[in-house]
Amino acid sequence: MRPLVAGNWKMNGLGSGLSELSSLKEALAASPPPCDVLVCPPATLIAQADALVQGAFALGGQDCHSRPSGPHTGDISAEMLKDAGASFVIVGHSERRQNHGERDGDVAAKAQAAWRAGLTAIICIGESEAQRYAGDANQICAQQIDGSVPGGALAANTVIAYEPVWAIGTGKTPTLAEIAAMHGHIRTTLARRLGEAGRGMRILYGGSVKPDNAGEILNLPEVGGALVGGASLKAADFLSIIEGLRPS
Image (cartoon, rainbow, N blue to C red; front, side):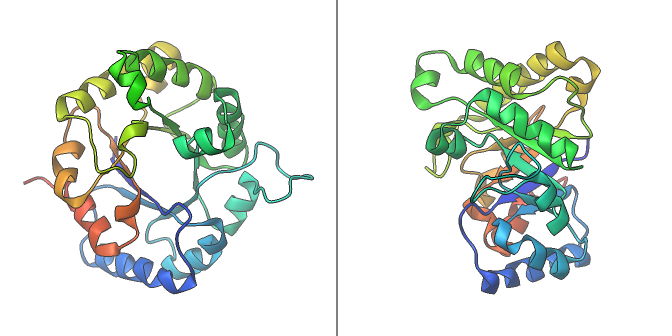
């Protein structure tokens, strides 16, 4: 499995910020990365970004509707993202689950929509702080996998992103042992559910990934890359995280 380092810009970024993608493109051309690289800017910037980066790295959306078209004001379909230049889409991010009431079934439908459009779905799972302290983290993540990952998921069309909700944007991170244990549990759950496909699927870690902790996290067993939030907004910070995958 080639690792994947994905940047999620969330609701940040105007056209003027695309200069960071130019810097990223130049740096990756000068020193080919040890991983696949993906940036998910706001949907408003995907087409401009596609023209700018010209395939130097992948682009993705941050969400999609389950339907290809229709009377869904303000929504965007997976087909629209594909048309704009995306090859990935994030679905089921905890901020979507919390702020928009998305349930596992909604996430599964969006993942299937991504496949329909020819996109790779990055399906997010993760427990709250209360659930972790109650000892329920493994159960919650297994339930989310069972409910959010459709049958037929393959390593070629699906990536899992484990993001403990309490670590996103807070500066907190689980210990390295906790991350390794959860990724091992996720791998076991995927293999139980999907067989060989589950054994080959990339599992990203997300939640306050920064240049100063990326190297340790990215080299843990079963960690197949990272889903990076705020640190992906600046090319220099994002590149520092990518460099964490190089052998020391």
